[in-house]
Amino acid sequence: MMALNDISFDVNQGEIFGFIGPDGAGKTTLFRILTTLLLPDEGEVTLMGLDCRTGFRELRKNIGYMPGRFSLYMDLSVEENLNFYATVFGTTVKENYGLIQDIYSQIEPFKNRLAGKLSGGMKQKLALSCALIHKPELLVLDEPTTGVDAVSRSEFWEMLKKLRKYNITILVSTPYMDEAMQCDRVALFQEGKILSIDEPDKIRDGFRRKLFSVKASDRYKLITALRNFPGTVSAYPFGDSVHVTFTGDELDRSVYEYLDQTGIHDVLIHETRAGIEDRFLELMEQGIRHKAQGIRDKVGEVK
Image 1: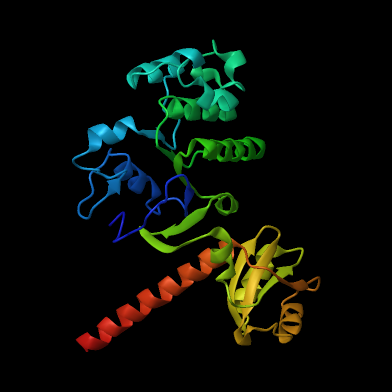
Image 2: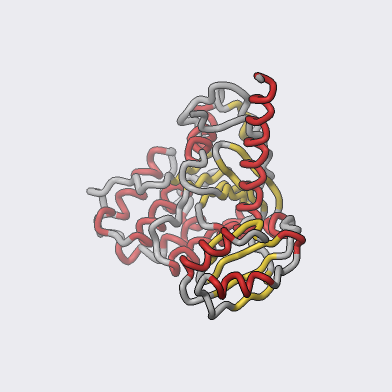
């Protein structure tokens, strides 16, 4: 299976550019290519004016990379890890301390603790400090908030925004759609393909149909019934509700009677604004339809 399929994009200096998509979409493969850890089979990748194949030595000096899994030395202390990474890049913690101060100061009281003994949020801050200690021009973060609590996720994004003043370009991948709104621009990623690239608000506003939020006490029964309703175009779970679109782009009033007949009597329906998740699912559906049509066309040609 092809991990990346004919993708093309540009990133502006100093922006936070997000890659949003589910596990297996190809985000990690892309980041490994961008950080010169993996060679692409074909195509061109240029970072900071250098080709990823021929300029990898120079590029590695100017890239900070935080992989999805915590990859620092578990048996070294917080301080030892940071000093080690500074030495690898030919610098010192003192020289670039101002760059990481806001982040590192939160874990500095625990500088003698082994990295393996840190909490998820503290590991995250240490990994980011190590990725920044050589003052890179490009910071690549592969799902940096996966597995940490909501408070740590929020703090992490606040730290990234503070890095704007240093004009560091940030590439970040995440499976969390809500984090897309924190980026300057995002690429919606699925099955190795980019579905859309734009500012988060513009991607969200690309959802043109009327969207309805439907609630009932038995959500599983509700979504099953809605997907079987003849007037439903799409129905996806969303928090404690189901987001639904109907044919004719209006609320099909007969849905109340239909749901009542299926034993769902406590239904609440209201129009709602689409989120970036809704647009992502819509683009996925369009891709599936186009793929299916292509298969039908090929079968027709064979006949």
